[in-house]
Length: 201
Image (cartoon, rainbow, N blue to C red; front, side, top):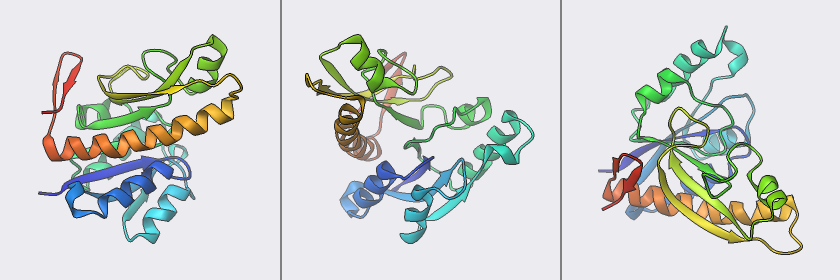
């Protein structure tokens, strides 16, 4: 049975593109059934539409408050009956309704080796701290900020002449490969979460 993926984006959609390309191989075991965004006119939605994939937009400003937006996002995603929801550069924090509906099925990727350097400036903070290894973390989202159970991590060595831009770009490459590999393993092999430990058989 092919797993159903809903991918959420806020920008150009490079991770969404990588997942769409991976899903083109039947052996991958998944299909992107929809790509959604929190704002109009994103590249991620455009590339999904060009590939014939369903799309939707749920701009925060269209709703009276965050709770209403959260309920709307939950309904739009649930309509596609996903087995996994993947935050692929989605820059909004999901609320209680969404987390309740998709608990232990909502993946996010972050550009640091969590729990170090959570938040939106992972590479910048890693460089400022002087670490020798940066990287990316794939995790299941919980109520915290980048605090959920970790699925996988990949290390990216920091070079002496790195800038925020060069380090960020190298992390993105590793992050994208990790995302594609791990989503494939999760949908083909399944997973369990015991306390904070994620296991893939």
